[in-house]
Amino acid sequence: MKRLVLATLLLGFASATFAADRTNSEVFRDVSTQVNRYVYFTIFDSVSAGVNEGVVTLFGKVTMPYKSSDIAKRIAKIDGVTAVKNNIEVLPVSAFDDQLRRRIARALYSNPSLSMYGLGPNPSIHVIVDRGHVTLDGVVNNEMDKVIANSIARSSMAFEVKNELKTNEEMRQQLEKL
Image (tube, rainbow, N blue to C red):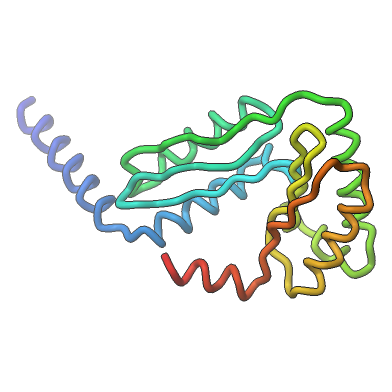
């Protein structure tokens, strides 16, 4: 019986050592994968993360409370993650915000210049609406697409529009800093 416990403890230590050997960028890649594969993650949610020596800090906004806790639980299971600080906000329930989200998303993804971003299971332009204030988040190919998306969102009945879209090049530079 003692040998089994010792073997289990040694396996536990080996696992912890392996997890500690993972770089911030490796953990970040896995965090990104887990968020994007979360079945309830939509274009109306936005989650970002910071990784520092196994501690993952989650930021962003989601439309339902369960999404925040589900995502944090998924991240906690990643090899190399020692702790999760969940700073994801839950957006308030609002019929006006829901209508605004749908109207902007429909206009963005029906635009011939931006329709390609709507293909696939995880469209790359996210529309975050918080009490009538809109934030565009995600990744686009170039500056012109950022300008077009911003123009479309500004033509809605939003109180304010923040364009936080990044080009592929800007995102690549950000990832290199990890």
